Image 1 (cartoon, rainbow, N blue to C red):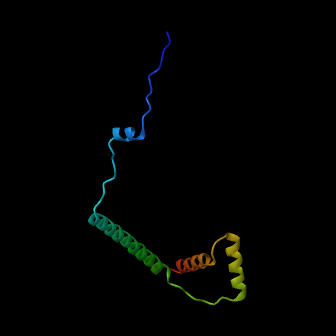
Image 2: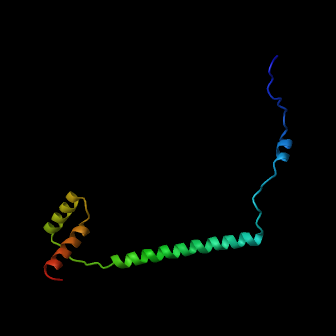
Image 3: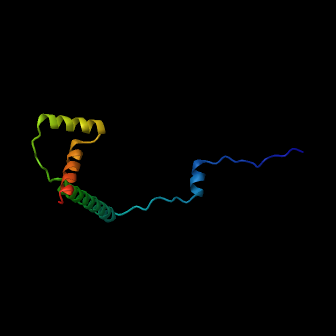
Length: 106
């Protein structure tokens, strides 16, 4: 007695696709596509406006410049201190001004 496995019959592609029901994506109408595109465009535009306003608010906070001339030696010391501590010269100047104002009660 020999044991034979299940018999496998060749199946054509047409038979394989006819057995499973085709589930396609729903086809939106032209009006639905337009409304979706309009919603997406409005959302993107709103995002751009929020980002622009955020950038403007940040710039408003940072735009209070003080222009003061420094003598050569002071400028060189400031550059060396900034380089040695790996920070910007403006950070050092801001900290120094803040410290001076606090020490003098301002």
